[in-house]
Image (tube, rainbow, N blue to C red; front, side, top):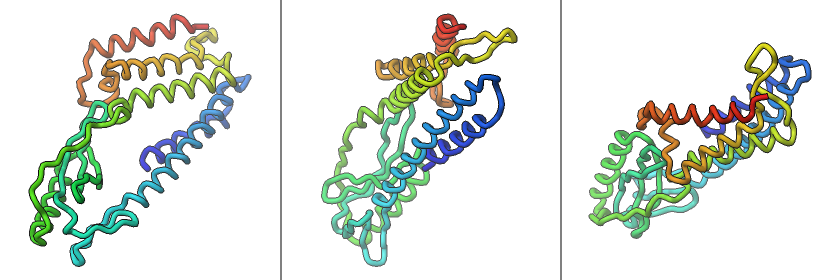
Length: 239
């Protein structure tokens, strides 16, 4: 939902920019218009997906009746062996996942980037399960994080770069970023190729995500290499 809201705001800003007179030939305005259409469409799709997911994954613990309701399914506390808090890598960060072990199977309840509040929830629920004589101590073996979870940033950059280049090439092929008073600058549409290249680097094992996440190992050398990487874009695409 947060991503959908961010996309909505970004799409509306792009639409507002498309209505403002920036250039004489209105190429920049056309680019903002097409960008707004794509971003708003993606935001709507993400919102619908998130809404359906939230309806199907909402979990309620009814402590009076001793039942856990997840979507349309109902589980008795006697079916729950443990409430576990697991740590999983997500891109270049850690994600803390609260899971319920039901009949030997781990069911994801909620995830956060901070663990303190989830630790309190897990301790409280485990205590209630113990009081109802339904909890048994077992070892929980979580599945390894999926390939998509490990390379989320890389996949995002590839998709963003493909949309950027595809839209620019077919609709705004001659549009440039005006970087000087004499009207010269780099072409807009090839920038997406360099963005997608960062995503491919992440898939190849280069820790690209650390350059975009605060307190995750940024280095001056990495930033310098990134600047050199985009300097090749300016060199090859300057018009």
